[in-house]
Amino acid sequence: MSTDTQTLDEGAVAAYLKENLPGFEGPMEVTKFQGGQSNPTFMLKTPSRNYVLRRKPPGVLLKSAHAVDREYRVQKALEGSDVPVSKMHLLCEDDGVIGSMFYIMDHVPGRNFNEPAMPDVPVADRTAIIDEMNRVLAALHEVDIHKVGLADYGPDGNYFERQTGRWTKQYRASETQDIPAMNALMEELVKRQPKDDGQRTLVHGDYRIDNMIFDATGTQCRAVLDWELSTIGHPFADLAAVIMQWQLPAGSEGRGMGGLDRAALGLPSDEAFIAAYCQRRGLDGIDNFGYYLGFCFFRMAGIIQGVLKRALDGNASNPERAMKVGAFVPVFAQHGLDALKRG
Image (tube, rainbow, N blue to C red):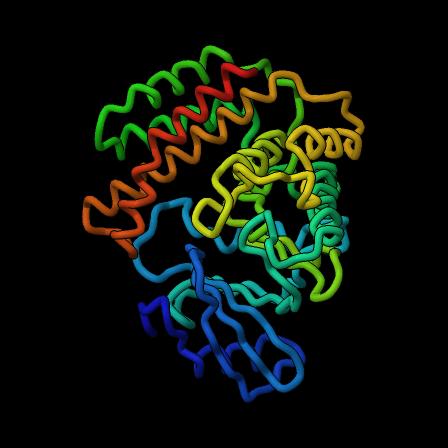
């Protein structure tokens, strides 16, 4: 039983799947997906079909972190909905098999884009892909959580109040220097918090184009991936997170659209994307969108502050990268303040 997140006990996995997964037949070839997943993910190739195994990292973890059982549950619930997800096969909660909980799903072939500008994609396809991203997001927020059995997937109450409190606490616990813009942003988010409008939907929590698989030659979304941060919350947090990313610098580092001539590239303006989303959901518009955008910048600043603290404590998996990312905390905080001021 290995505690290595880079490898898998292939014999133990194959034996378990032969006994528990109907139709499974070896031999099995295993490769690990590279990237930033906090839950190690592996391709399992067999003669008849390809699967994906996603596991909790072994060892001692934060109580609510790496919840692959929640990932499995939400994707299983969305099967057959207008939100494309991979087919879930089984969840193994027995740590004794490979050292931690894991689940098995179908491998979804297709293409994945690392940045929303999609520089290698024809203009017409870019337009269609971003519109499909919009369609899927609206469909996600229209899922009847009671009908699909997810009404208890997250707590009741004001989502933004809860999240602002949680991330303020996380930020203070990992604070390494005084950042006036971050202090001001946290204060303003509390002051300007809108009244709860009663919207309580499934939210992805990390909705970005690089967490989606599209048709290999077309523009249809085949699957939304990485549901680790999903919960029941407010839909505008997902929408604002998309717009937040687009305001970052273009290229493989920022993975945004900052400074690009979007119209020439077949990419929508922020306003056009928001309008299309509202039309799909039957909304008249969104008041005070700057608040939701400011909240997303705040949450991201809190996340990367935690990354910086782990680097300084010697616990980061890539210390050099973590230090580089951590330097952007004041930048994100200022972006958040600017968004609040614009309203």
